[in-house]
Image 1 (cartoon, rainbow, N blue to C red):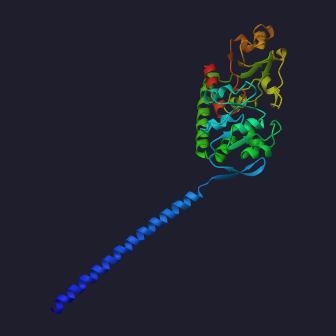
Image 2 (cartoon, one colour; image 1 turned 120 degrees about the horizontal axis):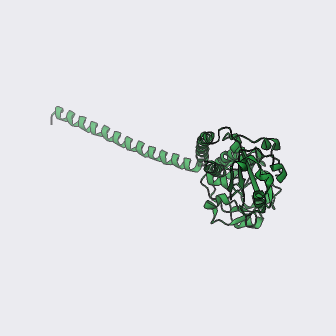
Image 3 (cartoon, rainbow, N blue to C red; image 1 turned 180 degrees about the vertical axis):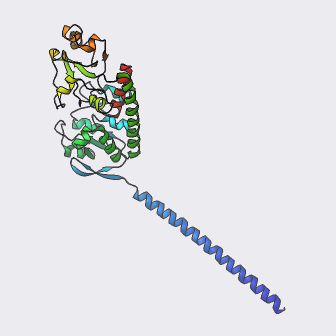
Length: 325
């Protein structure tokens, strides 16, 4: 066998060996990469947040992330705005927040005092309470023994926009909260333009009639705050004179209503209420500008008007526009 043939055979054998080693090395790298990816994914899965730590009225608290059974009595409006249905709805006896019933009608009621046995029966993953705990039957420690409990600060309790942001944070719904607020601002802007065309400089007053008594909304009382400050509706002089809304809502006398100089008056309450019957038969009331000009309107359900929240505000805007058009 000549040397030339041996050299050629040796060359091809060496080349094959080198190629084989390269292939094996590549396969090994692929396996390592695959193993690394699996390890990384497992690590990421292990690091997935199962808890969230937030500030509350009780200091920093650690809560479960993305709870499935949430109980937030009287603040179901905010939960619904985030696409969450609570495990029970706030009630005083048979009375509920009527404006939310289209979404909550099938839920069991929970008494506003939050009896511990009722709370326990709903098996919540998370309990959300207002900053003042005095109205609840149980203590913070007792509710916390049932489920992780978040107590809102006074600001979060009173400001539904801030509440929506905070609920979004603790419930893993930040994106939904941002979108809901952005959509609301668009709605307010559009409504502001429509009301300017409808009313011009005319004023509007809002009054709830119940149990034969008259409750005139101050500028910052419930939905009036949104209507006057955000929608830009002009305030009647008598309403300005009432000053800031206090904790208690005192009724106004029929005689005092004779001073109501509003161009338009929206009256909330059951048409069969004795107070409305008295108004319709009162010469004092009949001599007011709104009655004289046939600019008095009646709305049966006051629930969204006397509450605050995204749903309450949007329903009120829709009803206000529909009433005044």
